[in-house]
Image (cartoon, rainbow, N blue to C red):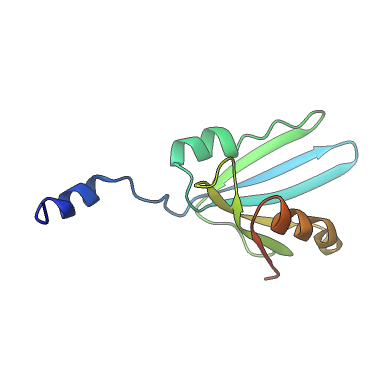
Length: 117
């Protein structure tokens, strides 16, 4: 069994590699930009589900990138996404004062850790 164990471990799916999507939404006079950095979501599910938001009355543009760009005013690291095994880091751009709303949501409902880059 000890000889087989390395082969069994090698067959397990690897954690998702660095991948991210920048989401731009605009509507009703408000423009929002955030970036979701994949931590442990299967690649296909990340691209087709998590990076495809459906927001009523919003024009959405999604751009896939290797990693989230610099310039975020806050990051919710390790945010739970759809289940305890699925984690992502969410980078927020725009108004730094929004942190007063985003930080409690991050640490409460998302189970993440707020950090300021």
